[in-house]
Image 1 (cartoon, rainbow, N blue to C red):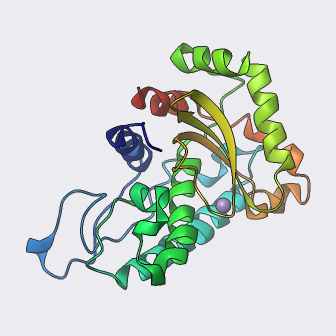
Image 2 (cartoon, rainbow, N blue to C red):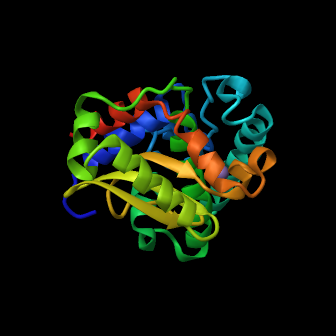
Amino acid sequence: MKILKRNKVFKVLTIILSLGLMFTIMGCTNAEDTNNDPITGTGMSFELPELGYAYDSLEPFIDAETMEIHYSKHFEGYKNNLNIALAKHPEFNKPLEAMLADLSLVPKDIRTAVQNHGGGYFNHALYFSILKINDGQTPNGELGAAISIYFGSFEEFKEAFSTAAASHFGSGWVWLIVTDNGLKIVSTANQDTPLDQGIPILNIDIWEHAYYLNYQNRRAEYITSFFSVINWDKVEELYLATK
Ligand code: MN
C-alpha cells in the first residue's frame, strides 16, 4: 500500500482493536520501559480482545459451540504463538500492521510465525468485531453509497463476495478492502492479510473451523448465514475511518 496514509490504517486498526476489545502491552520487565503506544510498544505482547457479546448471540446463524472454540481456542492459539515469536526479539519494535503489510521488516527467524500467527491474530480481531445479527439490515449511509458505486448495488456486491468466498480453494479469507481506487473484494490464503493492498473493513473466515461443526462441508450455507450476522454499523465505522 503505497499511497494510502499510514495514519488511516492506524486509525482503522485502533478501532478494530478497541471496540469492545483490548490491546495491551505486557512483557516489559521494567515498568519505566513501558511504552504506552499500544501498537508500537517495545517488548510488546498481545492479549485476546474481549468478544463483547455472548457465544450464543449469533444463533442460529453461527452456533455457540463454534463461536466458543473459534474464539477461545483458535484465536487464543494465534495470539499465544504470535507472543512466543515476538518474545524472541524484545528489541524488535514495529506496528503489527506494518509487519503484516511488509513481512520483510520482520526478523527472518520469526517471519513465518508472524505471517501465520500475527495474521491469525489480526484477521480474527476484525472478524469477531464485525459480527452481530442484523435482521436483514443492509449498509446505508456513505458505505452503502460506495458499495453501489463500486459494485453496482448491494445485491451485486453480495453476489461477488459470496462467489469469492465459495470458490476460494482451501483455507483463507475473503475481504472488503478500501484501496486508492475504491472498494475491492480480495481473497487471501491461510492467515495472510490484504494489508499490502488496502485497508480491510470486512472479512469472512472460510477456514473449516469457522463453520464445520454446524455446516460440515456446506460452506455455501455458512456464507449465506454470514450475511445475517454482518454488523454493518461497525463496517461503516471502519469505512468512515479510512476517509
Ligand atoms: Mn478462524
